[in-house]
Image (cartoon, rainbow, N blue to C red):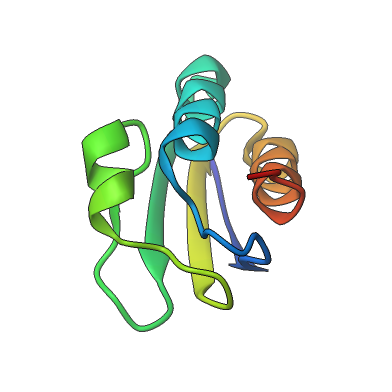
Length: 89
């Protein structure tokens, strides 16, 4: 089982708020992999939980780290990174 990480800088002026966080969590749950997310230097949380993701209070300019474990982890990590980089408020 593969394990990969990706770092992402959040560019959206309002950060990772409810709608894009919901889309992100939906993609995580569809991926059938284990995914955690954390702010740089922080403790990771389960990325399949909307409340956990929102509790991070991710703002514009924050660097977050995605950690993905499972089959197809590399592709899932790339897809999730792209989603976070290209979210629209």
